[in-house]
View 1: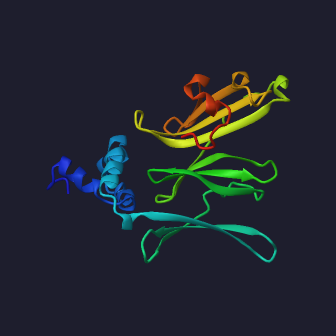
View 2: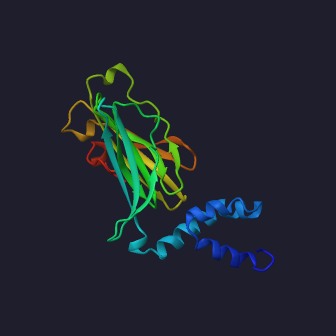
View 3: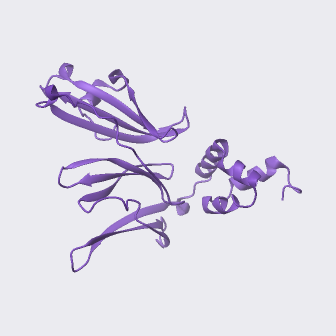
Length: 228
């Protein structure tokens, strides 16, 4: 095809194709693979998709848990067209096959077609973002555990608060998970909060720490469950 179309015309054609088709086209030749996987092309394709958005092209993510006679649970996931017909787009495999039976799966947040999933442990009553999932191309990134904080014995009697957020950073073209962890021995006194701010970068695949002043004071006290 490159013998008949200039490269810039070819790119404009590819930008208007669905993701599943583009994935197939990465096997055509090395030049197409390099083009389709380039970060600039991915960003342009996302912008083109958003600009041409149609309500009938939207998808709804549905999840359900079924139990057998032996009380063994299994999870099911689907994508459905967001249309009056509500037709099934595709079935999805369990994105958290590594999770334990004592955990529940929940949607923590969504952004540009990516879904951030959290695992809720019923025993510890604690939930945290665990996976960033692209259901359309079946790609999953498991988040590493954030660096430990407040491990000193002096914090043993402090109240602990955690807030998380998932969003897109347009300045660095990166998807990030925000974690704000705070401790206080007096819940009513914000000045006595000890706060740790951490950010996970999907592009880097790692966590880094920020100054506590990077977030408003009310978030340092666990003032919002979704501060993104």
